[in-house]
Image 1 (cartoon, rainbow, N blue to C red):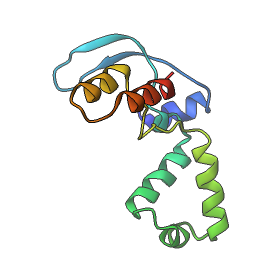
Image 2: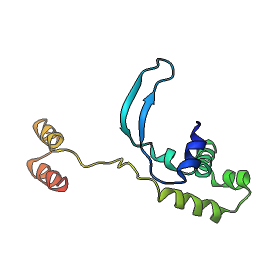
Image 3: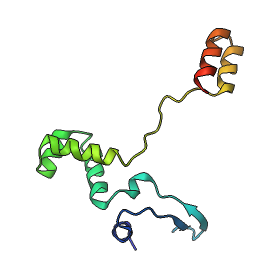
Image 4: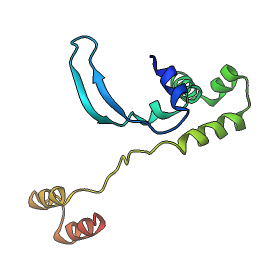
Length: 120
């Protein structure tokens, strides 16, 4: 079964993968694995995201590829984005990070207290 067949079969319903086999070595791992978020999108949305990445995020190029208007591309991107969690690219420092920076003299005690309060 290929990925598109699985996507069609699940019809957007959540699913769990319980067995993974590495094709080259035959090693199998069993457990409960949630597929990546992009794999949980419909096959049409997966194709759309791939096209967006290949076009380097150019909405103008997406308009040309799909033959639709700018608002249509933006609306679809917004709809897809609603299904994806985004990684925090600037997470709050851990307590250990703050203490390490304090020990190295990079921040004052007052700054450390503020950062520790923010991370609560």
